[in-house]
Length: 110
Image (cartoon, rainbow, N blue to C red; front, top):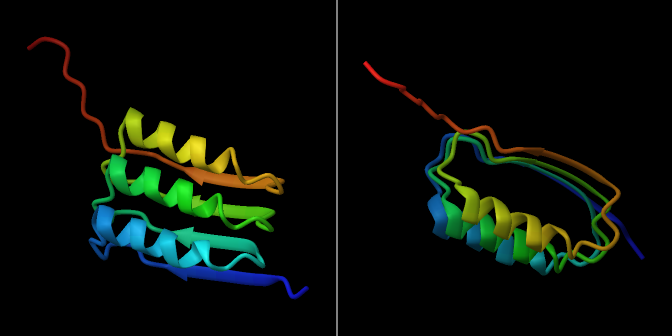
């Protein structure tokens, strides 16, 4: 069986939820994918896109190494939970690097 490695950088392209889910759907067909690096920071990805990406990646049954940068998007608790639930189904995943840093400004009083 041939193992595949894929690296892509789609940062600052405004792909949004639809683009993230579409990318995930395409990757879900890559069942021999073993190493994946996705840089998707600053792309207006929200809860729906993060969840869709996670569930799609669960179909990559040979995925063992994943680096996923989703920082500076619009992912909230629901999206992070959906992403985690999907990735939990990646049964061969042994190395995960996940960046979910978000912009948050909290003001207490004036």
